[in-house]
Length: 296
Ligand SMILES: [Fe+2]
Image (cartoon, rainbow, N blue to C red; front, side, top):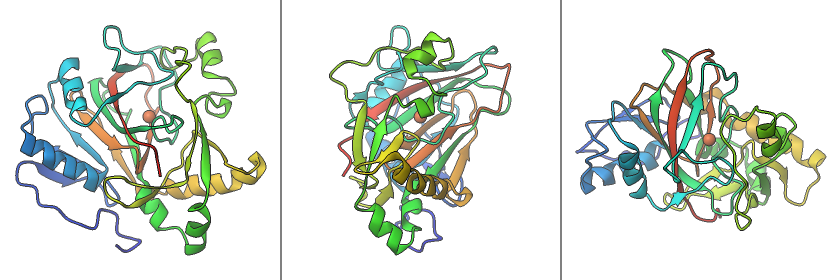
């Protein structure tokens, strides 16, 4: 594939679903499906489209939390967030709510979900429950493209490096830990103490191989605080270069939500960023993450 081409090398044919690409780099709308009543053949095509487009969304889905969970379980075991407390009555679902009074939102920085755990979430599946009339979009980047468009010299260098990913880094929480932020009343989601056996700092390759497609992708995000074996000062210029490169406008798509939009992305080859461009209105999404494997 050429460095300017965005989407996957293979164009697959879809017979049971309609796939409408969103942008040159990644993203597609899937239509013609009811995710709460999905046959296996349609599920297989959705899986294929997810691997091809990395971010897929389906509008006007009427799904209860149980439907949402049942759909998520088709992709694998549910990944439990180490720090964010679950929604009442649903230990596997997070409610991300911004109220009329909250100024900050969740996920307002480029990142890949839970990349600080030993086996980070492969998929994130969000359904919109309440939405502002405009604003509150989510942006995504294609990290395959980010890797493929590096120079040969940079590819060779970063291909040997590992990132240290910290889920509780003060740099991401305005100089505080998550607990300190919660104590000061500024957390964007209810917090909990992580289980002692859950790893919240993890070292992963900066270039990972996608276990399903075999393609290489940059694996960097705001949770990446340092390069393994380097000092902070040595790490920062490299990480900053990679983050700026990864988030070039040509590598991005932007999903606009409506109530009932379900969006699902592949954290193994995407970063995402939740825009905080709406104030004084409520926005609520339900989030489920699916366990992945150890990055290699
Ligand atoms: Fe996220």
